[in-house]
Structure formats: C-alpha cells, structure tokens
Length: 606
Image (cartoon, rainbow, N blue to C red; front, side, top):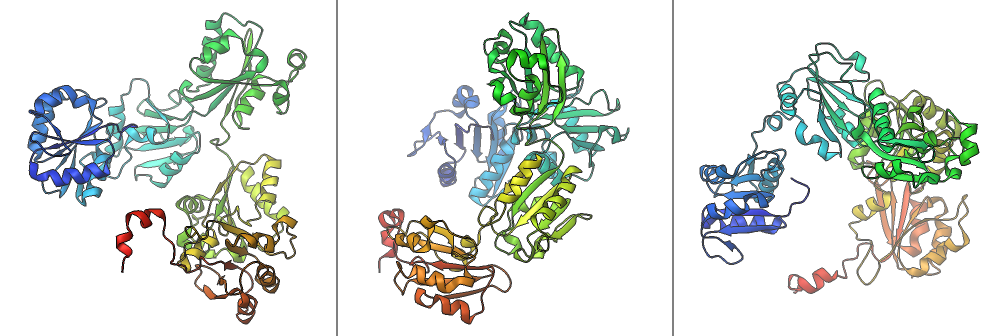
C-alpha cells in the first residue's frame, strides 16, 4: 500500500453485499461505502461513472464488491499509469475471493488483497508473476527498506523485472549490511547467487542486483543489466577555505569526485564540517539538498585520521576537518574516500558504521530456554553466524543446532572474559559475524557490560537483539498477570545480596515496602536470607512461586506462601536457573481493567 492510506472506496455492485462492505469498513481506517441506493452510513451517488470520473484518482484504493467484469468495465475509462493509478481489488458478492485487479505492486493492490482476504476469511487471488513464483517484487522492494531504486544506464526497470522473473542468472552484491540485505540472503531464489566481489561475477550473468553505494556499470559484462538499491549511508566531510568560491564550481567538483570514485550520489546521507564554516555559501547551497551539520574543533580533534595536517590545526584548532567530520557523522564508520584536496576545499567520505561491511558482533537474547522462544531476528542471526559463543549450561545447546555448515560453536563456560574477547576479536578482525548468545534477555543480569566495554575499547561494532526474560516466562507458566488493576501496578526485577553486594537503597526489605510483584533472580542459594528480608514487609501468607529452569524440558514450579520459601527451595534442592516470584498477583483473578469494568460488566454477571 502507499504510505498514506487516506481513502479506500468500497463500491457495491449489489446491495446484498452491504454486510461485507460494513465488515471491511470496520477494519480499514479511512474507508467509506459508496452506493447508488440510500443506505445508512453510506455515501450515495446517482451514478458510479459520474462519481468515478471526478474522484477515481482521489482515493488510495478501490474495493469493488461484485462481478469482476463489471469492475473492469467500470474502471477502464479512468486508467492512465500504474505509477499513479489507485489500487483496485475485486471481491465476489459471496466474499469467497479477493482479487488483485490493478496496481498490484506499485499501487499496493496485492498487499490490500491479502488484507481484505484475511478480514473476510476469503482466498486471495494474485496473478503477478513474481508473487506466484515466490520472487521478490523488485519494483517495491527498495521502498520497504528505505532504499532508492535505480536501473543501470540504458536499462528500464521493466527489462530488469523481465529477466528476473524469467529466472535468468542473477548476481546479488552487497556494499552494506542491514535488515534488507539480511532478508535477501534468507530468501534467495534458486537463480540468484550472492557474490562478495564484482570481479567474481561470471560473464554469463544476465542481471546484477547491487545493494549499496557503488556504481558497477564499468565493471560488469555488456550483457549484464544492473539494478541498484541505494541506501543513504555515505557521510561526507568537507573542509573549506574562507569564502570558498565559486559555489557552483565547488559543488560540481564534489559530484565529480563521487563519479571518479564510482560512488552513487543518491547514497549521500549527510554532509559535515567544522562549526567555523557555518556561514560558507557552499554549505548553504548543499543544505538545500542534504542534511548538513557542524562539529567543534574539540569534537573533531578526538578522531584519529589517516592524514592530519599541522596547517589545518593552525587555522582551526584541529588536525583534520574533512576526514574527522566524515568519521564522526558516520558514527565511526570506515573511510572509503580519504582526504581529497581541491583548489579551495578538502573532501572525505565515510560509510555509516551501522551498515558497513566487515566484522560484526550481535549480542542475542536466547530467551528463557525453550528454543522456540528466541526471536525471529535472533534465530536469523544464529543461522548466518560464523561464530556462536553461547553461555554454557545457561543456554540449551539445542538453540545452536541451526548453525550453518562450517560455523564454529563454542561454550563460554570454561573461558574467562579475556579468552572470550580474544576469540570473538579473532573472528571479528576477519570480517566475520559473531553471535554472543546469552540466556533470557542479555540486558537483565546478562554480564554484557564488561564485554561491551572491551568492544568499545577495540572499536568493534555490535548490536543487541533482545530476548524474552524468564520473568515473562514465569508469568506465562503461572498463568498470571503480574499487574492487577488498582492492586499491583509495579513489577520489580532484583536479586538477593550474595557475593555481589547490593546498593543500600536497593535492600530487599526496602523494595518490598511497595508490595509490588517481585521477581528475584540468582538467589536460590540464599533463600533463607531472602525470606527474612521479605517478611519484614510482606505478610507471611503472601503467594510465592519458585520457578526452576523455566520452559526447559525439566522445568519445575513450586507454589506456596512466603513463610515457606526457604523450605521449598531446600527440600527440592534448587540452585541455579531458579527465579523466585513473590506477590498477590500470582494466580489472582480479581480486579478488572476499566475497559472490562465499564463496557463489559454484563459478561461477568452471575
């Protein structure tokens, strides 16, 4: 669908289909029902032809409910171009089929068809060849991930799509890494192969799909057509002489340098310079087209650059402007164009650090134990990782069985922190993907702070994929809502004071004063002390649940009262991977939200 779904017209061929239209109207915001008879809640018109002649292109989409032939004859006079025509879907009068009629990809009719079919419980009928064959929709793929789309010189998008859907040999080449490239790698059609270097692409390749910022037209075979998906990932740093001019000459030189380096201008994300140059005409001109920002000399001077200059330092207070500004604005990404000197300017270009190729570390939350409770992103990362370093006995090894052939899978149980970092850095420095797999959510007692400190020290790029924490698994397994309207509205995640001291303000008895639902981690070994602390504020009969290895095959859950907590833990020999839950929310079925209390009271009357 188009970005703004402002209006969807529901046009009734037969008034008997009004209930179908009303169902769709309830589920599709901004939709209206158009009829030629008077009906409550509907827009009336004496003639569909007269109405559509004036309003057809004012709607984002039209849904005809009735015969396909009538739908086609009705819209035929108003069709102009697939890039501007609205989406059209036809639903038969019984609601059994939803058919994509017009503007399937570009206009969003295919997406709307699936949506309509889901609402009505109908069968979606989509005839677009790429959809029928399970192929990428090349004309809309870029929009999903914020990429500009551009076919190579002398090539139309239709020619590209024709080669692709006909299954001709296709190469896929990445200059960057993001969600979109992850998706493409996961969903490769049989006739598409990923290449790391353009030089490796065979001469008989008929289509190159390049995702990134480089122009490859000069490197591919004449029989190969190119489709570029261009993310905005290039950050340009500019150093300027005072009143650098003429402005047009400097800006044209900028684009000439991009062309000389075979970089695509559409990939420019930002332009940066030193704040001393805020009033330079060149930067004002560039600000008409790009986001331009400025750094102080002190900020620029924190960046190590390949080509520092004593002359630049003398005039600006920093050893670099162009290179340092490019690196800063890219978030520490690599320079792909070191400093280039012009007559009265310097120029450097860096790639956004979050998207640059090379080594990467993904810290993944494994969830509470059940391999099916890891996130989709976490699973995808495991499937493509070159190294999986998992947290020993805290994470079931079954989670790593999806590793690709040739991947290294290691337990960190026998390693100290320095050994773990050394192993990950070795893979990282070789441009590999490392997954550090932690139990639950890694940000809750996950011990990742020390690792991130090392990653920052070495300048290693990393990202965190959250996981389902065991306290959420506890709520699910206990069939409990941990927040009860007007009774308990706070959940406290904490631990008892064992070998790791607790801040004075976070002593258990102080936290217990709120009578909140308390989830206590890593404390089975000190259950007696925990019980004594909690009994200072909670009543002895407060419900308690001791949860051992939540969602694992050998999961065990023991319910009782707070006064019996220590006995429960001791009698059942519970140690590691045990979560203690305390509070009246456990198993509570009292208290209704205002939604139910005010609007659905009749459902609960005896």
